[in-house]
Image (cartoon, rainbow, N blue to C red; front, side, top):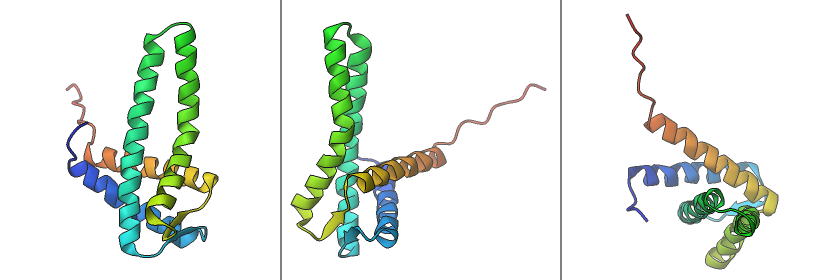
Length: 136
């Protein structure tokens, strides 16, 4: 695992903003304070990095394997994707003990989708494509 860098800090800030918006617009999402929102954003960053790593690892295994093992890895991948939402819900409940509630499965799924889209947008913002040189 690599050492956290500036983009990881930006991710946490983006996650904090998105989580704050979810708290404001969805009554099922509750955070008792800004500090809890920030800590939840850090937790989400850690869990989503772990899930992204697991997903990439499983996809690499799927491409490298054939036969029964490939099928088993595909089944595990299908279980990891929705399972990660339950992990987020349970870890939040366990760590924050009611001070943070992320709603149910579908709301957490929407939250994670928006978090990943926001992360992708900020990454594109900070890593623009090199300008193409037009032939003269």
